[in-house]
Image 1 (cartoon, rainbow, N blue to C red):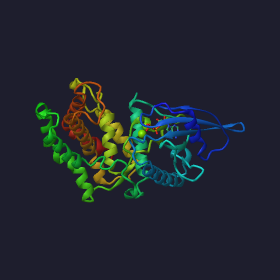
Image 2 (image 1 turned 90 degrees about the vertical axis):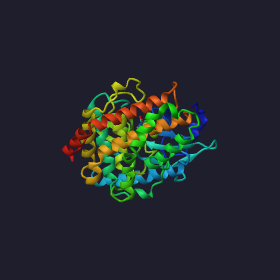
Image 3 (image 1 turned 30 degrees about the vertical axis):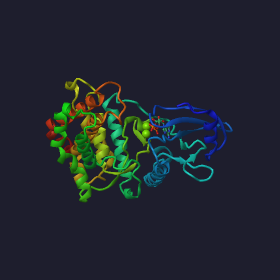
Image 4 (image 1 turned 90 degrees about the horizontal axis):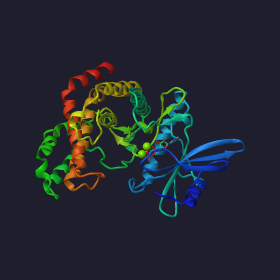
Length: 368
Ligand code: ADP
Ligand code: MG
Ligand code: MG
């Protein structure tokens, strides 16, 4: 992903900044966009910005994506100001171009944007201690709370039907039927596993359609390294990486966080005896999330948190199986049957959640 310096410098010059560029370079450990830190010098003062080239092959419509981001960050800023917070540290600040746009599209068809650099804060790559997981839960809960009065129906679905689990289920059945690679006969039990849990997978979406769960703003990439932690306080400061902000259910963000964050094994672990739901981590996340949400979730949302975790795990496992049946066309594989291994870990996690279902519900009840 080499990018010519002329292109980077031309992009930098489009945005409303002051002073002169002192230096710039690749920054951070993001896997999606090309991220640069740019240092400007104004007299003696230095000021940093984040410059990003948006991943156009994943995000087909950067204009809609930037619309979502500007809408959500403007709203967040107003809320943070009302609470007496610092909007420039607690919310991502989009720097406009000199023409007043939220992004710049260059002559090669790339899309660029600039953010204020959030100083004196860090992103952690992995959960080293339960406290890290707790802090990210508080940050994502607070994000949800601050946006609870925002009308999510006005946002674009950047990836349409991303968590439309019933639709993904239909697609799965179709792929099983077509069986292009003649693999279905090897994975009969796996197919049966998901068919048996059809109702589980439909439940969240049905509740949304029936008005029993509210449409919310969802983040959809609730990894630890998408939260900035304040260097002084050690607390979650700001949720970043807003590319996949979309309308959806709070249960999706919560559930996916549990799916990847509270599993005791890696997503592609072959030894399934290592796969389980870590109830301590689950408790940390529930506690953090509900603390951050501060009463903004409905009773139904809270009581369905375990269901969110199960649904996201089922959906993900079913997607791995679908991809395996289709010949590994979506998820990049690094070994034979990699997608099948990934499917197996998600199934094992679902089974463990079913074992621990009462405990999961008791934990939620404790913090509601
Ligand atoms: P990706 O989608 O590629 O993960 P991110 O928006 O998460 O892109 O940015 C990649 C990394 O850049 C982040 O993990 C973080 O370390 C850093 N970063 C992004 N935005 C900011 C910001 N406003 N201030 C400081 N660092 C940032
Ligand atoms: Mg990121
Ligand atoms: Mg991202």
